[in-house]
Image (cartoon, rainbow, N blue to C red; front, top):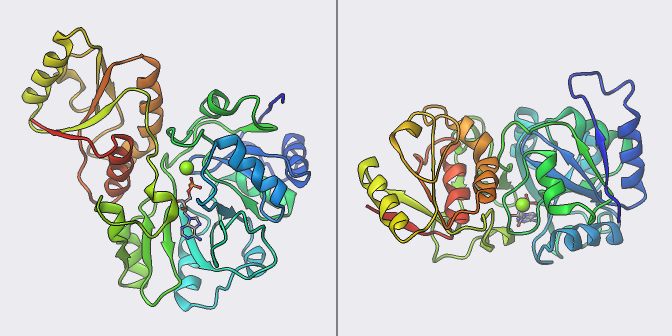
Length: 347
Ligand code: AMP
Ligand code: MG
Protein backbone atom coordinates (compact mmCIF):
# COMPACT_ATOMS: atom_id res chain seq x y z
CA UNK A 1 0.00 0.00 0.00
CA UNK A 2 1.27 3.50 -0.86
CA UNK A 3 1.09 5.82 2.10
CA UNK A 4 0.11 9.38 1.14
CA UNK A 5 1.60 12.26 3.15
CA UNK A 6 -0.37 15.50 3.43
CA UNK A 7 1.61 18.46 4.77
CA UNK A 8 -0.53 20.92 6.69
CA UNK A 9 0.63 24.32 7.93
CA UNK A 10 -0.85 24.61 11.41
CA UNK A 11 -0.27 28.35 11.54
CA UNK A 12 -2.97 28.94 8.89
CA UNK A 13 -6.73 28.99 9.45
CA UNK A 14 -7.65 25.37 8.80
CA UNK A 15 -11.40 25.88 9.10
CA UNK A 16 -11.74 27.72 5.77
CA UNK A 17 -9.54 25.85 3.34
CA UNK A 18 -7.03 23.01 3.52
CA UNK A 19 -8.11 20.47 0.86
CA UNK A 20 -5.55 18.03 2.31
CA UNK A 21 -7.77 17.62 5.37
CA UNK A 22 -10.85 17.06 3.21
CA UNK A 23 -8.97 14.27 1.42
CA UNK A 24 -7.77 12.74 4.68
CA UNK A 25 -11.30 12.97 6.14
CA UNK A 26 -12.67 11.17 3.07
CA UNK A 27 -10.15 8.37 3.65
CA UNK A 28 -11.46 8.00 7.21
CA UNK A 29 -15.06 7.90 5.94
CA UNK A 30 -13.98 5.19 3.49
CA UNK A 31 -12.77 3.13 6.46
CA UNK A 32 -9.08 3.62 5.74
CA UNK A 33 -6.49 4.31 8.43
CA UNK A 34 -4.93 7.77 8.65
CA UNK A 35 -2.33 9.14 11.07
CA UNK A 36 -2.72 12.70 12.35
CA UNK A 37 -1.09 14.93 14.97
CA UNK A 38 -2.68 15.62 18.33
CA UNK A 39 -1.25 17.76 21.13
CA UNK A 40 0.10 14.62 22.86
CA UNK A 41 1.50 12.27 20.17
CA UNK A 42 0.56 11.27 16.60
CA UNK A 43 -2.60 9.17 16.49
CA UNK A 44 -3.55 6.36 14.11
CA UNK A 45 -7.18 7.03 13.30
CA UNK A 46 -10.05 5.02 11.88
CA UNK A 47 -13.86 5.13 11.85
CA UNK A 48 -14.83 3.96 15.35
CA UNK A 49 -18.21 2.74 14.09
CA UNK A 50 -16.79 0.32 11.55
CA UNK A 51 -15.20 -2.98 12.55
CA UNK A 52 -13.18 -3.39 9.32
CA UNK A 53 -11.69 0.08 9.79
CA UNK A 54 -10.83 -0.53 13.44
CA UNK A 55 -9.34 -3.94 12.62
CA UNK A 56 -6.92 -2.19 10.25
CA UNK A 57 -5.53 -0.18 13.19
CA UNK A 58 -4.75 -3.33 15.16
CA UNK A 59 -3.18 -4.92 12.08
CA UNK A 60 -1.02 -1.92 11.15
CA UNK A 61 0.32 -1.56 14.70
CA UNK A 62 0.51 -5.24 15.59
CA UNK A 63 -1.50 -4.30 18.67
CA UNK A 64 -2.90 -7.04 20.96
CA UNK A 65 -6.65 -7.24 20.38
CA UNK A 66 -7.51 -7.06 24.10
CA UNK A 67 -6.11 -3.52 24.32
CA UNK A 68 -8.99 -1.08 23.69
CA UNK A 69 -8.67 2.19 21.77
CA UNK A 70 -9.38 5.79 22.69
CA UNK A 71 -12.20 7.40 20.68
CA UNK A 72 -11.47 10.97 19.58
CA UNK A 73 -14.24 13.52 19.10
CA UNK A 74 -14.40 17.17 18.03
CA UNK A 75 -17.72 18.05 19.66
CA UNK A 76 -19.31 17.00 22.97
CA UNK A 77 -22.58 16.30 21.11
CA UNK A 78 -20.80 13.36 19.39
CA UNK A 79 -20.15 11.80 22.78
CA UNK A 80 -23.81 11.63 23.80
CA UNK A 81 -24.44 9.14 21.02
CA UNK A 82 -22.24 6.41 22.50
CA UNK A 83 -21.33 7.22 26.13
CA UNK A 84 -23.19 7.84 29.36
CA UNK A 85 -22.04 11.20 30.70
CA UNK A 86 -24.58 11.64 33.46
CA UNK A 87 -22.04 11.94 36.30
CA UNK A 88 -21.51 15.49 37.62
CA UNK A 89 -17.74 14.96 37.81
CA UNK A 90 -17.65 14.12 34.12
CA UNK A 91 -19.33 17.42 33.21
CA UNK A 92 -16.76 19.33 35.29
CA UNK A 93 -13.80 17.44 33.79
CA UNK A 94 -15.06 18.07 30.26
CA UNK A 95 -15.65 21.76 30.95
CA UNK A 96 -12.22 22.23 32.52
CA UNK A 97 -9.90 19.95 30.48
CA UNK A 98 -11.37 19.54 26.97
CA UNK A 99 -10.06 19.95 24.45
CA UNK A 100 -6.92 18.57 26.11
CA UNK A 101 -4.80 15.56 27.14
CA UNK A 102 -7.41 13.92 29.39
CA UNK A 103 -9.12 10.66 28.39
CA UNK A 104 -12.32 9.75 30.24
CA UNK A 105 -13.40 6.13 30.65
CA UNK A 106 -17.22 6.18 30.71
CA UNK A 107 -20.04 3.64 30.53
CA UNK A 108 -20.55 2.79 26.85
CA UNK A 109 -23.95 2.74 25.16
CA UNK A 110 -24.18 -0.45 23.11
CA UNK A 111 -24.76 -0.65 19.38
CA UNK A 112 -23.05 2.51 18.13
CA UNK A 113 -19.30 1.83 18.14
CA UNK A 114 -17.59 -1.27 16.82
CA UNK A 115 -17.05 -3.66 19.75
CA UNK A 116 -13.41 -3.94 18.61
CA UNK A 117 -12.86 -0.35 19.81
CA UNK A 118 -13.70 -1.26 23.39
CA UNK A 119 -12.23 -4.77 23.15
CA UNK A 120 -15.62 -6.01 24.32
CA UNK A 121 -15.68 -3.94 27.57
CA UNK A 122 -18.85 -2.12 28.64
CA UNK A 123 -16.86 1.10 29.02
CA UNK A 124 -15.33 3.39 26.41
CA UNK A 125 -12.30 5.70 26.58
CA UNK A 126 -12.84 9.07 24.91
CA UNK A 127 -11.15 12.44 24.55
CA UNK A 128 -11.25 15.69 22.58
CA UNK A 129 -7.71 16.51 21.39
CA UNK A 130 -6.42 20.07 21.62
CA UNK A 131 -4.86 20.29 18.18
CA UNK A 132 -6.24 22.26 15.22
CA UNK A 133 -5.45 19.48 12.71
CA UNK A 134 -7.03 16.72 14.80
CA UNK A 135 -10.14 18.77 15.54
CA UNK A 136 -10.66 19.89 11.95
CA UNK A 137 -10.06 16.39 10.58
CA UNK A 138 -12.57 14.78 12.96
CA UNK A 139 -15.07 17.55 12.24
CA UNK A 140 -14.80 17.06 8.48
CA UNK A 141 -14.99 13.26 8.78
CA UNK A 142 -18.07 13.71 11.03
CA UNK A 143 -17.50 10.39 12.76
CA UNK A 144 -15.98 9.36 16.09
CA UNK A 145 -12.35 8.44 15.35
CA UNK A 146 -10.68 5.58 17.23
CA UNK A 147 -6.99 6.39 17.52
CA UNK A 148 -4.14 4.82 19.48
CA UNK A 149 -0.62 6.18 19.12
CA UNK A 150 0.71 5.77 15.55
CA UNK A 151 3.70 3.53 16.34
CA UNK A 152 4.35 -0.16 15.94
CA UNK A 153 3.11 -1.79 19.13
CA UNK A 154 5.80 -1.70 21.82
CA UNK A 155 7.84 1.10 20.22
CA UNK A 156 8.08 4.68 21.51
CA UNK A 157 5.05 6.79 20.53
CA UNK A 158 5.60 9.14 17.57
CA UNK A 159 5.93 12.85 18.23
CA UNK A 160 6.81 13.71 14.60
CA UNK A 161 5.41 12.60 11.23
CA UNK A 162 8.84 11.09 10.40
CA UNK A 163 8.45 8.71 13.36
CA UNK A 164 5.09 7.55 11.99
CA UNK A 165 6.56 7.04 8.50
CA UNK A 166 9.48 5.10 10.01
CA UNK A 167 7.14 2.63 11.72
CA UNK A 168 4.12 2.48 9.42
CA UNK A 169 5.04 3.51 5.87
CA UNK A 170 3.31 1.12 3.45
CA UNK A 171 1.02 -0.18 6.21
CA UNK A 172 -1.48 2.71 6.36
CA UNK A 173 -3.36 4.90 3.85
CA UNK A 174 -2.02 8.28 4.87
CA UNK A 175 -0.19 10.58 7.28
CA UNK A 176 -1.19 14.18 7.96
CA UNK A 177 2.08 15.94 8.79
CA UNK A 178 1.36 18.90 11.06
CA UNK A 179 4.84 19.19 12.57
CA UNK A 180 6.03 18.06 16.01
CA UNK A 181 3.46 17.52 18.79
CA UNK A 182 3.49 19.61 21.96
CA UNK A 183 2.92 17.64 25.18
CA UNK A 184 4.95 14.69 23.91
CA UNK A 185 3.49 11.93 26.09
CA UNK A 186 0.05 10.37 25.89
CA UNK A 187 -3.10 11.61 27.61
CA UNK A 188 -3.97 10.92 31.22
CA UNK A 189 -6.60 8.16 31.35
CA UNK A 190 -9.13 8.51 34.18
CA UNK A 191 -11.94 6.08 34.90
CA UNK A 192 -15.19 7.80 35.88
CA UNK A 193 -17.33 4.72 36.34
CA UNK A 194 -17.16 4.40 40.15
CA UNK A 195 -17.61 6.80 43.10
CA UNK A 196 -14.02 8.03 43.16
CA UNK A 197 -12.29 8.62 39.81
CA UNK A 198 -9.21 6.44 39.23
CA UNK A 199 -6.18 7.42 37.14
CA UNK A 200 -5.47 4.40 34.93
CA UNK A 201 -2.55 6.01 33.12
CA UNK A 202 -0.60 9.14 34.16
CA UNK A 203 -0.21 11.67 31.35
CA UNK A 204 -0.41 15.27 30.24
CA UNK A 205 -2.95 16.30 32.91
CA UNK A 206 -1.56 15.77 36.41
CA UNK A 207 -3.22 14.26 39.50
CA UNK A 208 -2.76 17.62 41.21
CA UNK A 209 -4.64 19.46 38.43
CA UNK A 210 -7.48 16.92 38.58
CA UNK A 211 -7.79 17.12 42.37
CA UNK A 212 -7.99 20.88 42.18
CA UNK A 213 -11.27 20.64 40.30
CA UNK A 214 -12.99 17.42 41.45
CA UNK A 215 -11.40 16.59 44.82
CA UNK A 216 -10.14 13.11 45.61
CA UNK A 217 -8.67 11.10 42.75
CA UNK A 218 -6.82 7.83 43.24
CA UNK A 219 -4.03 6.33 41.16
CA UNK A 220 -4.48 2.70 40.10
CA UNK A 221 -2.07 0.71 42.29
CA UNK A 222 -1.22 -1.52 39.34
CA UNK A 223 0.53 1.35 37.55
CA UNK A 224 3.30 1.89 40.05
CA UNK A 225 3.53 -1.55 41.61
CA UNK A 226 4.96 -4.16 39.28
CA UNK A 227 3.32 -6.97 41.23
CA UNK A 228 -0.29 -5.77 40.88
CA UNK A 229 -2.34 -6.14 37.73
CA UNK A 230 -3.25 -2.73 36.29
CA UNK A 231 -6.97 -1.96 35.78
CA UNK A 232 -6.35 -0.67 32.25
CA UNK A 233 -5.67 -3.48 29.75
CA UNK A 234 -2.95 -1.55 27.91
CA UNK A 235 -0.82 -0.83 30.95
CA UNK A 236 0.36 -4.42 31.30
CA UNK A 237 2.29 -4.41 28.02
CA UNK A 238 5.96 -3.46 27.67
CA UNK A 239 5.84 -0.21 25.84
CA UNK A 240 7.86 2.60 24.47
CA UNK A 241 10.98 0.44 24.31
CA UNK A 242 14.01 1.34 22.18
CA UNK A 243 15.99 -1.51 20.56
CA UNK A 244 19.00 -1.16 22.86
CA UNK A 245 18.55 -2.28 26.47
CA UNK A 246 17.72 0.72 28.63
CA UNK A 247 18.27 1.03 32.38
CA UNK A 248 17.45 3.83 34.79
CA UNK A 249 20.51 4.66 36.89
CA UNK A 250 20.04 6.07 40.36
CA UNK A 251 23.04 7.62 42.08
CA UNK A 252 25.39 10.56 41.88
CA UNK A 253 26.72 11.59 38.50
CA UNK A 254 30.33 10.63 39.26
CA UNK A 255 29.21 7.06 39.92
CA UNK A 256 27.04 7.05 36.81
CA UNK A 257 30.07 8.19 34.79
CA UNK A 258 32.10 5.35 36.31
CA UNK A 259 29.39 2.87 35.33
CA UNK A 260 29.42 4.16 31.74
CA UNK A 261 33.20 3.67 31.61
CA UNK A 262 32.93 0.14 33.02
CA UNK A 263 30.48 -0.81 30.29
CA UNK A 264 32.62 0.86 27.63
CA UNK A 265 35.68 -1.19 28.69
CA UNK A 266 34.10 -4.28 27.22
CA UNK A 267 33.91 -2.46 23.87
CA UNK A 268 30.23 -1.65 24.25
CA UNK A 269 28.77 1.58 22.90
CA UNK A 270 26.94 3.37 25.70
CA UNK A 271 24.51 6.30 25.60
CA UNK A 272 23.31 8.42 28.49
CA UNK A 273 19.95 10.16 28.56
CA UNK A 274 20.25 13.28 30.69
CA UNK A 275 19.02 16.87 30.60
CA UNK A 276 20.56 20.16 29.48
CA UNK A 277 21.68 20.96 33.03
CA UNK A 278 24.04 17.98 33.25
CA UNK A 279 24.93 17.10 29.66
CA UNK A 280 28.42 18.58 30.03
CA UNK A 281 29.26 16.43 33.05
CA UNK A 282 29.17 13.12 31.14
CA UNK A 283 31.51 11.43 28.67
CA UNK A 284 29.87 8.58 26.72
CA UNK A 285 29.48 7.42 23.11
CA UNK A 286 26.32 9.52 22.99
CA UNK A 287 25.27 12.10 25.58
CA UNK A 288 21.65 13.05 24.85
CA UNK A 289 20.05 16.04 26.59
CA UNK A 290 16.26 15.76 26.77
CA UNK A 291 14.80 19.10 27.84
CA UNK A 292 15.45 20.71 31.21
CA UNK A 293 15.08 19.01 34.58
CA UNK A 294 13.80 22.24 36.11
CA UNK A 295 10.94 22.25 33.56
CA UNK A 296 9.70 18.68 33.43
CA UNK A 297 7.20 19.47 30.66
CA UNK A 298 10.20 19.96 28.32
CA UNK A 299 11.41 16.46 29.24
CA UNK A 300 7.96 15.05 28.45
CA UNK A 301 7.94 16.87 25.10
CA UNK A 302 11.31 15.43 24.07
CA UNK A 303 11.26 11.97 25.65
CA UNK A 304 10.09 9.80 22.75
CA UNK A 305 12.18 11.66 20.20
CA UNK A 306 15.17 11.12 22.50
CA UNK A 307 14.51 7.37 22.75
CA UNK A 308 14.10 7.08 18.97
CA UNK A 309 17.19 9.21 18.27
CA UNK A 310 19.32 7.20 20.71
CA UNK A 311 18.13 4.08 18.93
CA UNK A 312 19.44 5.35 15.62
CA UNK A 313 22.95 5.52 17.11
CA UNK A 314 23.01 1.70 17.36
CA UNK A 315 24.12 1.65 20.97
CA UNK A 316 24.67 -1.48 23.05
CA UNK A 317 23.26 0.08 26.19
CA UNK A 318 21.38 3.21 27.20
CA UNK A 319 21.39 4.63 30.72
CA UNK A 320 18.81 7.20 31.77
CA UNK A 321 18.71 9.52 34.77
CA UNK A 322 15.49 9.27 36.84
CA UNK A 323 13.07 12.18 37.33
CA UNK A 324 11.10 13.33 40.38
CA UNK A 325 7.62 11.76 40.40
CA UNK A 326 5.62 14.96 40.83
CA UNK A 327 3.36 16.71 38.34
CA UNK A 328 4.12 15.60 34.79
CA UNK A 329 7.27 13.87 36.15
CA UNK A 330 4.97 11.03 37.22
CA UNK A 331 4.01 10.36 33.59
CA UNK A 332 7.63 10.76 32.42
CA UNK A 333 8.84 8.17 34.95
CA UNK A 334 5.95 5.84 34.12
CA UNK A 335 7.01 5.82 30.44
CA UNK A 336 10.72 5.61 31.23
CA UNK A 337 10.23 2.67 33.62
CA UNK A 338 8.22 0.84 30.97
CA UNK A 339 10.80 1.62 28.30
CA UNK A 340 13.42 0.19 30.67
CA UNK A 341 11.32 -2.90 31.46
CA UNK A 342 11.62 -1.70 35.10
CA UNK A 343 15.42 -2.20 35.01
CA UNK A 344 16.93 0.08 37.67
CA UNK A 345 20.63 0.17 38.56
CA UNK A 346 21.69 1.85 41.79
CA UNK A 347 25.27 3.15 41.80
P1 AMP B 1 -3.11 4.23 23.40
O1 AMP B 1 -4.29 4.12 22.50
O2 AMP B 1 -1.94 3.43 22.94
O3 AMP B 1 -2.79 5.64 23.78
O4 AMP B 1 -3.61 3.54 24.74
C1 AMP B 1 -4.89 3.74 25.25
C2 AMP B 1 -4.91 3.35 26.69
O5 AMP B 1 -6.24 3.50 27.20
C3 AMP B 1 -4.50 1.90 26.89
O6 AMP B 1 -3.74 1.79 28.06
C4 AMP B 1 -5.87 1.23 27.01
O7 AMP B 1 -5.79 0.01 27.70
C5 AMP B 1 -6.67 2.28 27.77
N1 AMP B 1 -8.10 2.12 27.58
C6 AMP B 1 -8.81 2.28 26.46
N2 AMP B 1 -10.11 1.99 26.66
C7 AMP B 1 -10.24 1.62 27.95
C8 AMP B 1 -11.34 1.21 28.77
N3 AMP B 1 -12.58 1.11 28.29
N4 AMP B 1 -11.07 0.91 30.06
C9 AMP B 1 -9.82 1.01 30.55
N5 AMP B 1 -8.74 1.40 29.84
C10 AMP B 1 -8.95 1.70 28.55
MG1 MG C 1 0.30 3.71 22.45
